[in-house]
Length: 451
Image (cartoon, rainbow, N blue to C red; front, top):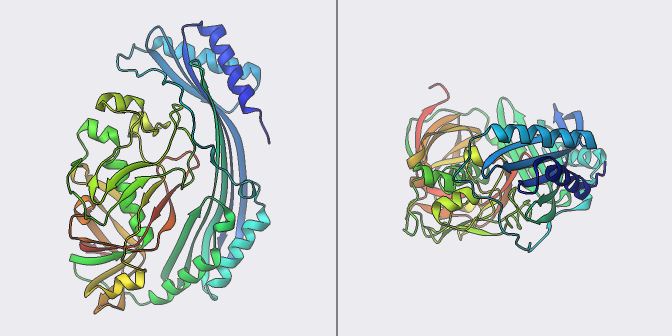
């Protein structure tokens, strides 16, 4: 399916002018999204699905500040007229918003997205080959997971004269290998299917499963830990959604101390859509680019959209999204810079006694101001003594402040950065988080699988 997105956006604006008059302000965003997914279980493909759709989003403001938004997947002329009529009717029922930031000033884009035609056109056979590579590399263990390819092309136009276009693609491999009740996991996300090495992922998952058999519990307490990239992803996602999110600062739920040495000097964090799978502009038409969040352990930046930026007296950073009015503007392509800690094995070698943690899940914030999260480990935890893995450990519950875990003097950053998938309200369902493994001085284990 190939739609004329520019023509659709223009048709909606024509309807806005015809129905709402010349003083109405409107932003139209037309998205063409395609997602294809190949699932496997018991080491065999059992599902192959593909979805492609065009969605027209409209934000309309009339009468000096009455605003409503709506979207439709219907694109015939009568459907577009209906979209404008329904949005206009809703806007006229809304109260005026004195803090509405209005349409931004048109600004030139510095890039056009990270689109890979081969990934956008990837066939079921190509995804099946990636699955076969994962299964084969797991060495005969039972495996399950998925390989996904996705593409997104967006056109944004508004009554202020902007007309922007951008596109991006992504590929994800995510799977487990299982042996005698022990699961090992490996996952990766890239902008191009050609860069996704599922044989490496399958071998890694198989090795983890074999090393996780006959796991035993450990007592609750504070442990030094090595977090593998999948686990670090949860930490970074928690920080960018709850701390560097400008709305959290406005609301007073962020515990950031901008300009102070709040993190270890080894911690440098940025949002970098150009290096990830982002688009060249956000849902408000603001150009996107690298946003520095932590430099050498000092928080230096926030993510903002137009409304949050106005509240903070800042310039919008290009983090508007369909969910920003509720959850705030969140980094979509966060990247934690590598350090000098080496590989996971080298980080473990520097651990006198502690835990090697593969993955975290089901995490929930219990104290947003301190960024305290509770959750469970999964897919592998191991006890480390004298720099060596000595025993697999059963599932653990933790309750830990992510801010305090990265405090000065507490962090060694690994040297190998991996792209991991996670969900941060991105337009393609998954966001790419680029992170190395971390060795942390303290991690609060509050229970085991039985409690």
